[in-house]
Length: 148
Image (tube, rainbow, N blue to C red):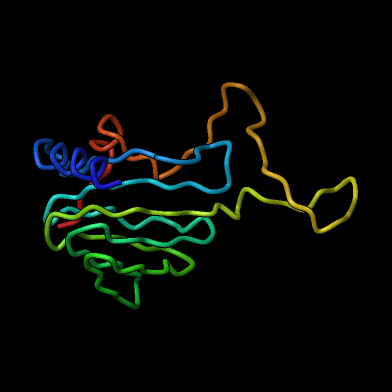
């Protein structure tokens, strides 16, 4: 994780968006997704909706996790629980975080049994790809706007 974070932080420092990331576990077909995100100082992952349960582990640096009503500061080794609803993450210095999300909005009750067992919802068509704000690779980063 340290090497991955270092590589992405080097990239984040070079690109105009100030961000670089990739999913290290999971993806659209999984409920659990873990993404290493590097943010240059002053850069932000703009406000977006928490799709389930999520945490931010600060691997290095300092960040601020914010909602419309609350703020939490994190630094090396801190684990912040992302509250339900809208949130944003801002790097107060060059930072690398591990965002872990369990996308509970992709779960449903199994209709055939009525049981409490859960399964992942798949896209309806082969060409229909779920949209997510969490896969923030270099190609996607310019599409994210920055707050002033």
